[in-house]
Amino acid sequence: MDKLQAMETFVAVVESGSFVSAVEVTGLSKPAVSRQVSELEQFLGIRLLHRTTRRLSLTDEGRLYFSRCKELLGAIQDVESEVGLHSDQACGRLRIAAPQDFGVEQLAPLWGLFTERHPLITLNITLSDRTIDLVEEGYDMAIRISALGDSRMVARPLASVRLIACASPAFLAKHGTPQFPPELRDYPFISYSYQSNGDEWLFRHVDGDSCSVRVRSAVYVNNGVTCREMAKAGQGIAIQPDFIVNAAIQSGELVELLEGWSTGEKLVVHTLYPTRNHLPPKVQRMRDFLVEQFKVPPWCPRPAA
Image (cartoon, rainbow, N blue to C red):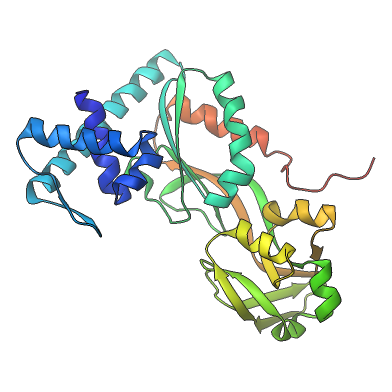
């Protein structure tokens, strides 16, 4: 048994809440995750987890061991970072958290290029739409899309994001095309479940006018790409970030609505990392790489030649 890897696997199971979820974090198979935790329990001679068909929970001994594992693994990571700082060599494991849709649509194509440039850095990427506590959960950095950064973190803006109201040509041919925000009340919406404002949207016009509209959601989905695909299929109007819908608008599969009106808050893609006097080289390299890649956001339409 690789004791260090078993400890990392145990921590991943506890933090993710299940053996299945830990598979995504560790990159191991489910049997391997289960086996490592079982071998760790056998080695220690104690039960670390209560297992039921519905949930996992820590035993008292498991809670103490989890806390000590976190401390030890964090100390190892700090040592690796310190060594990297003194050698100025970017190396070691880099844990990154990113939103699910942005991670799939925009970040996934970039990781190969980064690892080609920095072969000594091992990426450990978690895609989740929940707000991850970087310090508490042991992440080196995160990519977030929000109006404001986390005041406890160093935030480097990467690109602005525009929310766009859109629908398919077939949907608009059947239901008509809204010209002003108040008309949206009469249309079914495909809404993102985690939207902070719920069904209430604030619209602003370029001339300074504004209005608030409560829309009628026909369905809620916790995934922006699914919202886009349902809108393309003619099932309603969606309000989604431009990095999700711009390609479909350019291809004619979706039509942008309400020309001259902006939707919701101004959002920014940030990269965040904990405040430190000495930033590890691996974090510096990733930060600079992302700034370079998003200098011209790939989802923005290019002017015609």
